[in-house]
Image (cartoon, rainbow, N blue to C red):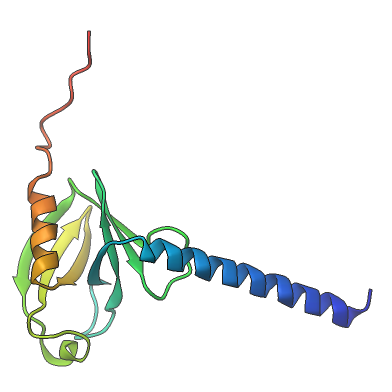
Length: 144
């Protein structure tokens, strides 16, 4: 086997794996979710924002970046751990990627700080999901 053929075979395999990963991610994102923009804090003024899809589960929120090839969620926040600190409107250079009807929540989950931006409908869905979480003190009883 010639070295050129070997290199070509490796490149074709890498291309096939990349296309498969991209296709999987595309079908995962097309499966539904809520549009959101998230950034891990601390960041400079308007940098670090990532567009993506949020999916709500019983115990966690999964954030999938639009520009990622990772097969699973890029960020996972626990429902019991999320604490919303404040809310604000976009400022300065954030208007390059957001409109004035966007609301940005500053929140903490397990010691990590995040900012997440939603439109009004998505904000209502997030707050309903968060406020309907079970009380941390309640536990399921095991049958005797």
